[in-house]
Amino acid sequence: MMDYALLDALATVLRSGSFEKAARLLGLTPSAVSQRIKLLEERLGLVLVVRGQPCTATPAGQKLFRHAEEVALLENSLREEIGITGIAAERPSIRIAVTADSLATWFVSAMAAVDDCLFDLVLDDQDHSAEWLRRGEVRAAVSGDSGAVQGCDNRPLGSLRYLATASPAFVRRWFPDGVTPAALAAAPCLTFNAKDMLQARWIGKVFGEAVATPTHWLPSSEAFVDATLAGIGWGMNPEVLVRDLIAEGRLVPLVADAPYDVPLYWHWSRSVQPAIRGITAAVIEASGAVLLPPET
Image (cartoon, rainbow, N blue to C red; front, side, top):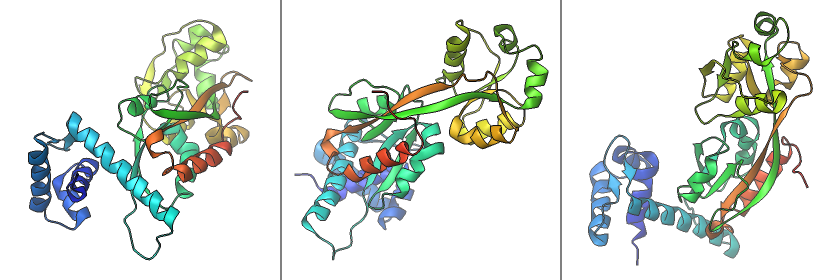
């Protein structure tokens, strides 16, 4: 039988990244937290935490962390089902992998609709966010991957539409004779990080060939829009973030009627499905207000 006070200490250390922060959250001293982790490791005969800045989990520690999170979520769900209301309880945390552009456009609305848990978000590219779920490091994920994840279910949410945009001054400077592969090979673009393939995929879709583009690396959805407005480069921005700027003439599409749509999917672990039913409903509603309807 697991000692859940010890598991709670482990989960709090791994979530916060340090014994000192975990102690403040638990109302204990760092020494007391350390003793709980040591006792749990001695009972199991396993090292669970790699001490460092931040503290990280060993493979065994990661599995126990996942178990502790699932237990807290299921206990919270059980309280609601059997009508326990008079006893105060801590809200459980749920770790979810999301894309930066989803967070910037609609996921916060989903979070606002759920008040019985705390969110622990991991940001990753839409082509890679489901990997967190495959590794067992999150309980749910917003992903561009429609493939099944073992032990999980998924459903389509819709497509986030992107537009290749730039400032009018940038277009005049870099594309005086129109947007062509040769011009794109000289004009600086904006790239979120090394995993971001949106610019390359848009070029391939519109022009039918690959173009090596000079790029600024800019890992922020909001800064992407700001940098586009400032004329630093052209970028693939979510339509919902630039629609008004285009209407005002502050940004222009590089090519008319040439959007790029990215389908998104909601994946969740079956082990916590009852406990995150409310989150799933909020995700579906919030995404539906922004994304294009799923293709049928």
